[in-house]
Image (cartoon, rainbow, N blue to C red; front, side):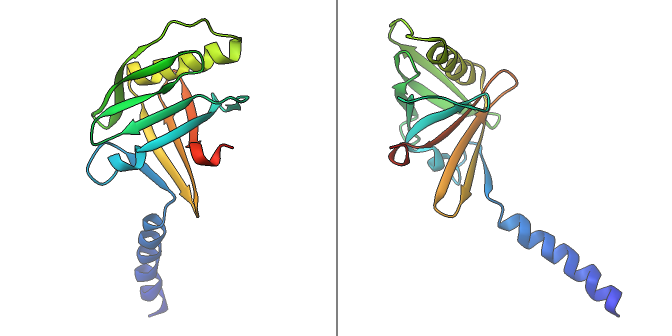
Length: 148
């Protein structure tokens, strides 16, 4: 009888743990698209923390727009989700990048937006991080109000 209870308890425990996962894949559906909304500061590129001032991206999912800075230039455009991947068409100013870190950050952001990328929200307690990545690049963003 004890073995039978364990067989029932194991799938139940697995279901409860998966329901409490801190990871949410944002695929553009009605349940997840709004998790992008707001101002986000780019803190990490390819796993390395970048110095301030951090580039910022602002998403407005109801309008399908994004704006902000990429490390070198101001950007704005429209975004959507195709096959669960974030894709955007953006225009940017043509200012010179001040250093290699800014240039590589700008390149990573444009690669991710142009080629399409997976977006995952990691939420633990009051903390939130967005991970945007594809085979070529990866950035991690935090809410801009927590980037002081």
